[in-house]
Image (cartoon, rainbow, N blue to C red; front, side):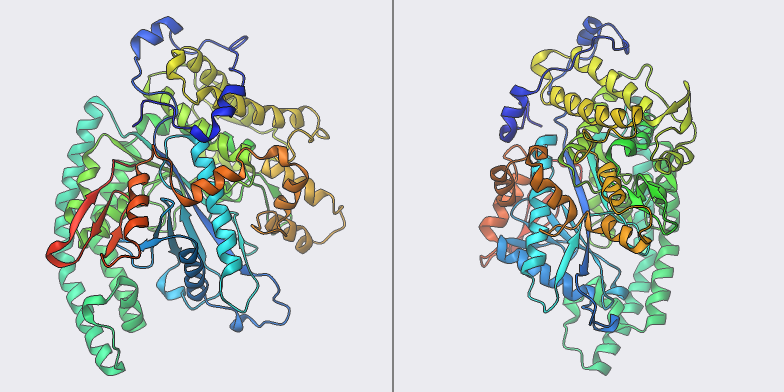
Amino acid sequence: MSSESPSPDHSADHQQAPSPQANGARANGADPAVARSRFARTTPLVTRLVGLETEYATLVADRQNIDVEDLPPSQLVYSQICEAIRRDQPTVTGLFDSEQMFLASGGAVTFESHPSMHALPGGLVEIATPEVQSPADLLACQRSIDQLASDATADSETSFDLRILKNSSDALGHVYGCHENYEAQVATGLGLLVYRLFVLLLWVMQAISLVVAMPLMAITLATVNVSRIRKRHELPTTEIEPQDIFELVPTWMSSLLIASLRLVHLPTVLMLRFVARHVAFRVQRRYLAALLVSRVSLCGTGNLDPENRFQLSAKAMAIDSVADMGGFRGERPIFVYGHWLGQFCAKSFLSLGSTRQMLRQRQRLQIGLSDSNMSDLAEYVKVGSVSLVLDMLESGHTEGLPILKKPIDSLHRIANDWNLVSRVPTHRGDMSALEIQKEFLLAAESFVESTPANMRGEAPLVVYRWRELLDSVLAFRREFSDVDMALGRVDWMTKRWLIAQLGDEIEWTARKKIDLRYHELSEDGYYIQFLKSRPDLRLVDDESIARRRRSPPASSPAARRGWLIREFANSDELLQSEWTYAMIGRGRRRRRIEFVDTPR
């Protein structure tokens, strides 16, 4: 990790932003001088590796004369978007997923759809940013990806008027959206030893599961071969991908295969769930839950439900657990460990060694409670505040931070109350979402002030913008008619204001149209139209967006991945990539190229 502040594109922001003042702030933890001596830093604040994964929804804009059965299947839409992206920049396929596509910009595109639904309309396209060390760089990368997704959809070669939405819920109530990723200490001291012992045990269970699953895979491949012969399928057996299996075997058999594999891996899943809930990231989960639950009051994107009730966040209303796998049985946790499930239960068929990295102390902490923000300020504060609080927690700066007693109940209560009056139980008594946010912000200001000036990095800008966002919502809380400061900065409040302009007699369908088109990434999108009249709300200039669309920041581990893709994407050498390494060449000449450690 770099020892310098990795934000070259935003140096002007760092110079102009005023330093946060601690006047009136409650002292949080040890005296600043003691803190300096006790927690000596070797890297600046908010320079951990971070990344975003955003699911974009696709739709046909004008369906008046199109029957549902005539709408384009999701597989076609995804392939056409990918073709448009390939025309924009060099790309290579993923190592474990042939439909995944890694970009020269350092990011990756994935088709978020079950193979059995490829022929249905709709579908989600997930695009992940490269892993970077600066919230400002991450914002630039995310905006370049938003632009790329919009341009690729508009340039896709179909006969339909395709549009893409960056939101968290459709009109039918399906929930998707954004995940955040942070490099963090999975445990320390004795807790780290216990964690590593569990990983070794999981490795043994993984090997056993692989042996037990071999006969199932053999039966499946034999059935596939028979189906190929009967259907005169020309695809070589050596080229069969996991998604092809479901297409080549009877439906009943693919269902039986999935159920059997789930049963084989069930002990591993149960063990992973135990580690996720009781061993890994214990300190982070204890304190971050309050920060993330209350954060929907600032960074929620708003949602109009079928009962015409306005909520702060559709994603928040769908969350049902604090920590879990996320998707194995349909659960939606705050802290997601689905990538661990993939390591132990999916990639194990290709490499048992893929789980070796699980022994490292710094692991990827994934957060599922995250909205797909249109506002630059909300997007920046969403990531910057969590990165800064993680620095606080790893420095032992936890005294006085609120701890929620009932995180899920508190989340739903806060998300259901756009008036922001609900109070939820904490270990310090009942508090509102804004009070919790204020406590974390005051603690962050104190922590930054106690850090030597040469080690503060981008942290002063984070707390400055965090306070700006909080003040916007506090102004509304003091006087409901005072929304001027929040418009364009707070997504849920901007969306609610737009809906209110229609009046009280307008039907739900017209209101929901505004809800959805607020997130449309085109010139017709309502937030983009609003932004044209308020260009001052943009925190990233066009030059920075264009630069991040071509290549990742030089300080990012993705820089080497991007360089390899640009060099070998169109060469005779076969290049396939993963987040942490790439494989180049064929046969005996094939070799592995490692990237710098990432939290992916």
